[in-house]
Image (cartoon, rainbow, N blue to C red; front, side):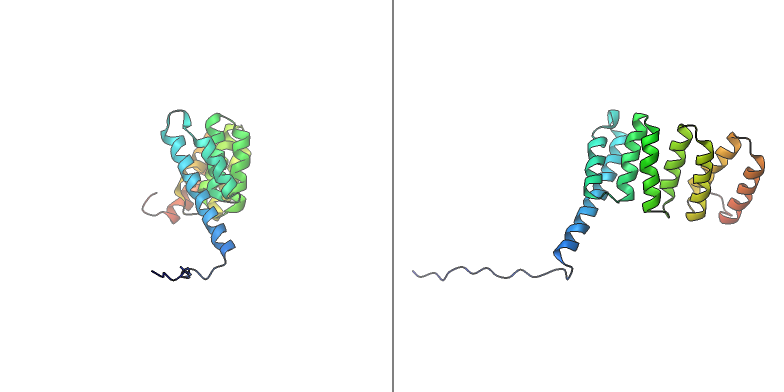
Amino acid sequence: MNVPPCTPTPQPCWSTAPCSSIRESARDDAGELLARWADLEIRNAPGGGDASKLASLALLAAPRSATALLASGSVCEARGDFREAAEFFAEAVDVRPDQGTAYSALARAQKATGDLGGARATLAQGIEHAPTFAPLWHEASELAAMVGDLACLAEMNARALELFPNGM
C-alpha cells in the first residue's frame, strides 16, 4: 500500500503581532501572575510561603512591572527591611505614577524608617496623581493627625468631602 508522504499543514496565524511582541507580552503576563501569587503567599501562607521566590521570578520575567516591584517590596517589608522595600516601592511609583497603591506602600515604608517628611510628601504626590484612591486620603489624614498638623488635616478633610461627597 502506497501512503503519500506526510506534509505538514500550515498552522493558522492567530495574531498579526511579531513573535517577539507575543513573547514579551507573555513574559509580562507571567510576571504579573507571579507577582500576584507572591502577594497572596505573603498574606495567606505561614511565614510568607514562597513569596520571596515568586517575587524574584516576577522581577526576572517583568523587571519594569509595577506589580512585580510592589510584590518584591512587600517581601522586604514583611522581613522588616523597610529601606529596601522603599526602594522597590519608589521604583513602582516611577513605573506607574497613576497607581495609588504604590504611593501608599512607599509612604508606609517611609513611616517605618522614621522618614515622616518623606511619607507626607509621597502621600501628597499620590493624592495629586491618584486622587480617587481613598486609602491615600486615610493615610495622609492619619499622618497629619500623628504629627499634630491640624490645619493640614482640616484642609484634607474639606478636599476629601469634595471628592467623596458620599463618604469614602
